[in-house]
Length: 170
Length: 207
Image (cartoon, rainbow over all chains, first blue to last red; front, side, top):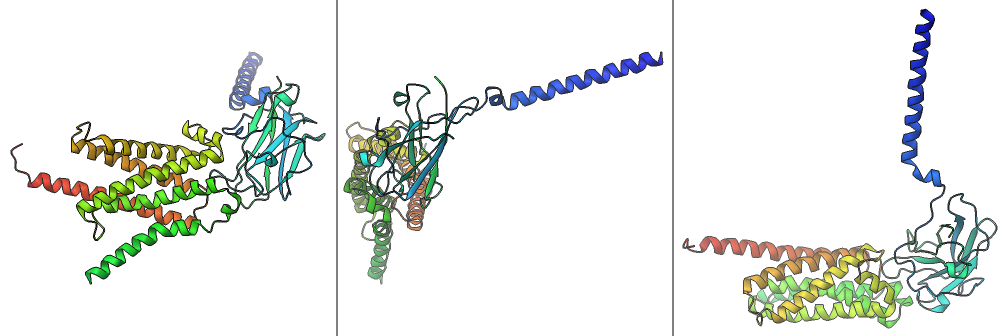
């Protein structure tokens, strides 16, 4: 008899434990749905595509330089860094308006998915000191969905600005 | 005595209106803007200055510009506000069309754009009403109430728009002119309310 009771108690404890474990994983699953699919893709930002110039040339630097735009490009899901991806960068700077050709330039990511562009100092335009970056599928064999970013500098005196892309494979 | 007081009041108002424009003229941002963009920015600053004059003239608070004369000036300054807003938007359009289109369609990434666009429509609506309310035989009371509501929208929208922008206006002078515009508008509205209350009290109980 004693052994049966012990067993029944064990059974109850085990069941409670299993239910608890189920609840925990269930709650965690609800809280972080992205984890199931891995790294979420970066959505295009409002106004990101404004004054974009498709096919702006790949350049060593934009104008005289002095300001550094940095960032990374990774694949959605597994977060793998993407090499050789073309990113166009433009802004209203000390050397020109967003719409002017000399304000635009493109660069390619390195083996770790990083890119950087030496460019003229970004100055506040249309109320905010901000830059523009584009990943355009049309210039990359349509491998990933097109994304336009419009990061804002925390201060107009900043000498750098960073923007990271997570691209969704087509 | 009375004359010197009048001069002092007008001088203070002139300083309040002109100072933000003069200080904006020293902004380092101007070096990287073309004449159209510069004109657009200054039109905005001037519009804010004119907005300070409007409640002061409408209320007849300024010496030499009492009730009827003040209201005539008020109408002309109103035309000035309309012109300034048109130059502001047109100049920005020339500088970066897609940003202005985004603003007008309320899909801009910058929240201040929507405040500015709402204020712009309120200015247009006021101008249209001011030019046509007699022809449409609107009762003066209806016109006055509509004008007051639109004026509140213009002041609130314009002030929030200006305060959120990082542009050629210097921070302190911008805050000061915005505060003055809001204070003058509130003063006028409170006066109108108390005036209405007192006329109602004085009116005979026939109704």
